[in-house]
Image 1 (tube, rainbow, N blue to C red):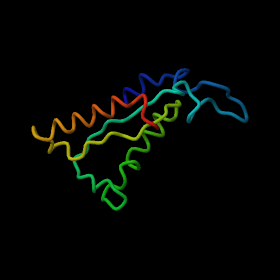
Image 2: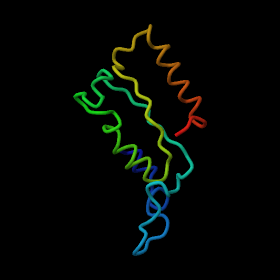
Image 3: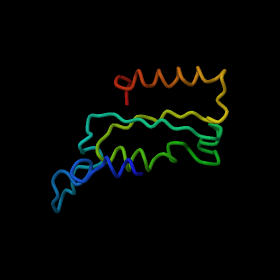
Image 4: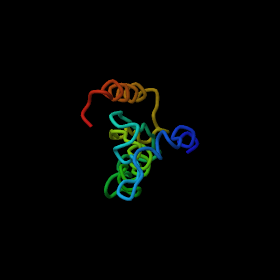
Length: 115
């Protein structure tokens, strides 16, 4: 939250654009970050099945919605699906290269993969 407060300054990420009776600023896809991409990289302590439609935590997309929609999409970012590493406390020396390669592939395609 501190990062958001410092970076999303009034007049930059919000409070920009036309403010009238019919339009309340450039936001939700219209803001200063329009045309730029953003992606969350998150880790969980639980299994991937815990973050599914019938999982105890609900779909990971629902968990991340306030950040993806309310923080990233608000100033106009094209929000990419999150890169999630499940059970991160269980990533050991054998599985670390796999996770590293998986993240590297996502980052390599960040600018070109379809939204």
